[in-house]
Image 1 (cartoon, helix red, strand yellow):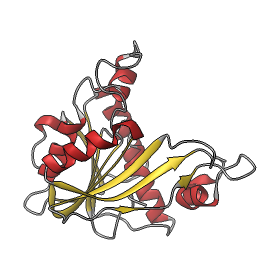
Image 2 (tube, one colour):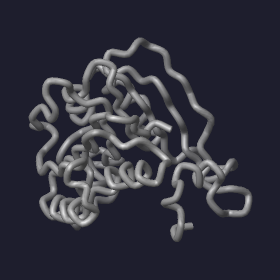
Image 3 (cartoon, one colour):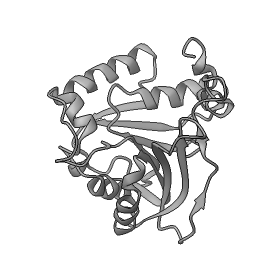
Length: 219
């Protein structure tokens, strides 16, 4: 739904880790299941993750498309002047600092808790990088929806599309996907719930559609 790229777009993945999202965007384009962006910036604060991401980009011969940026997004320079970005995606830390059990491993702790940046700071950084009308797409736990909406609007990003994710029909949502638009007009569309499982415990047809050819050997 909200994490799709369009032909010729300039995109970024904040907190890219080992570069999985940029690589999947390119893989889906190469298999004919999506469109190839003109440029993708994978931004990551952890040096070891940047090194792994850079190796993956080089081995897949994608250096002309994917650029790994080792930087803190709170002080990130303008990535693509003068045009700005069409899309920023982010899988932010799910837990605010001071909540839950913190992982003793620094890398996992940064990924799960807001130790290096808050969601409000992520939203502000996305808004700074996006062109007028550009999209910011992310996922978070449902208990953070109200606060996320407030942070988005404070940054000048209007929530436009919302989708809840459930494991099965009898379970409460454990995640939401949201697309916001820089400078968009107020009007939120709530999409049908995305079910992870089908009736037999396997992936639902929608999940298989999202995975595309990437599902081979993974389901």
